[in-house]
Amino acid sequence: MDLLYPLDQLIPLPYRIGFAAIFFLALGLHDFRKNPGNPKRAKEYCFLFSVMGLAIAYAIAHDFVTAGISREYFTQGKGLVEQDFAWNLSWLAVKASYSIGLVLGMLLLVLNNPSKKFVQLPYRALYLILLWPLGFSLVFAATFGLVAQWTFLGKLLYLYDMHELVELRRSYTSILVELGLRKLSEALHLRPPTPATPLIRPAYEFAVVHATHWGTCFGAALGTIVAVFRLSMARKKATLC
Image (cartoon, rainbow, N blue to C red; front, side, top):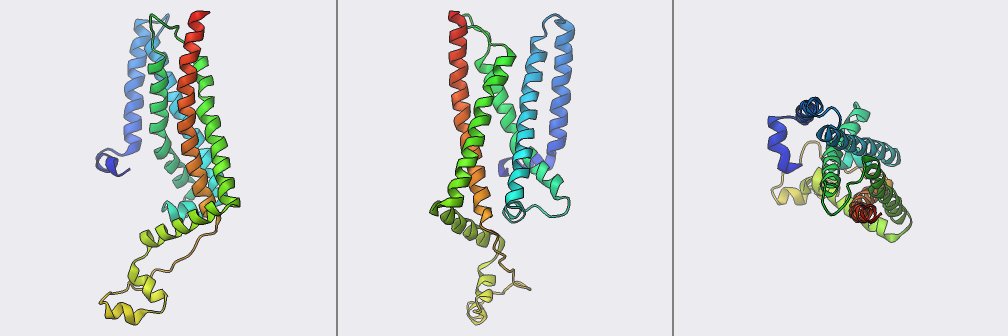
């Protein structure tokens, strides 16, 4: 993420994750020593990091499945290199999902905070509520992918993706050269790169995977909203019982 680029330069992501894990582990051990019978904070930290771990595991599995459909989506679209592709793909998934898992875990913990009005749900119930964003993510990912595969919307997305690849990977000079308009580029005083960057169009599955990822994000967001509603309703129901 561009906003985090200076932070990435100062403290790389692996170190940030490691420091956070050590910090919360120390706090959890301290809480366990103070309250061995019921270490509430330690349980919260374990839940938080377990949700982050689940989000990372899902993202890695998701990216490996979609890479099997269109490897070019990650090599041309995301800029991953073929060398150590599996590792680079896994690390891309980690960077994209760890913060989402932390935010989702914190959201559920905050909504399940102790209250005089409502009963606090057990952690087992919170894990079950996580099935909503997971399920919605899977359903919408499959739906968006099928729509892109079988309807004209996928063709429009493919044209958009090709335009973006041209903008990102090639200069207008190289486009003129490849179209046989070298003289026009010279007349415009444009210096083509040597050699001109060729446009290697990826297969149509590129757009299918792109749509699948859109569906994943949309489904996860919608599922999170449903999860929040279900959590609130579950607390009210548990209180009335």
